[in-house]
Amino acid sequence: MAEFPKTNRNRIKRAPKRGLYDRESIYQILDEALICHVGFVEAEQPYVIPINFARVEDTILMHGANSSRLIKHIQAGYPVCVEVTLVDGLVLARSVFNHSVNYRSVVLYGVGRAVEGNQEKLAALEAITEHFLPGRWLEARLPNRKELNATSVVSIKIDQASAKVRSGPPVDDEADQGLPIWAGVIPLQEKPLPPERDKLMTMDVAVPEYITKYTRKHK
Image (cartoon, rainbow, N blue to C red; front, side, top):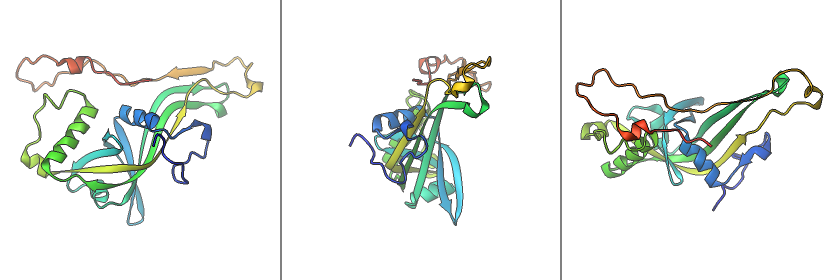
């Protein structure tokens, strides 16, 4: 199915014209984001936890310490809500009321499971590492048995999802369009700065090409 079905849970109600439900748009936003926020309820107390992740097909992969409250919640198969937001610009209108932000966001819903077995865990950790920095898994030391045993990995099946996107110039009231006030967009883009060498390095190791050429995807 090309689109996620619209339900009361994932339907965009505020500014519905900005809503997107096709997998291509939703997955593109997820794949560009480095951090997601996971919402869950425990003992009637809501929590929102930021965490790095990766998407593989229609699942979200995460890892954490065995004692992590979030990881334990997901392992138990309780429902969660996952959100990411990419900020593309500040929208400056002539009136304060009409200021806005250009952004791309995704909210998804699903239930999780524990990723079991060293091979499946390693495959998931590779996906998370490669989402973090493509090429790093092949160079860095891989997890040893002790580290694997101390790490829990979970997978969340994306059951429902929607994206919301705002782009373009400010939308001022017609009466304000002639005011002598600067209006427009300040584009924002996440991009890497030159890498900084770890001062504890004892050998002269060249910076890998995958680091020097690293860039953030941006529409």
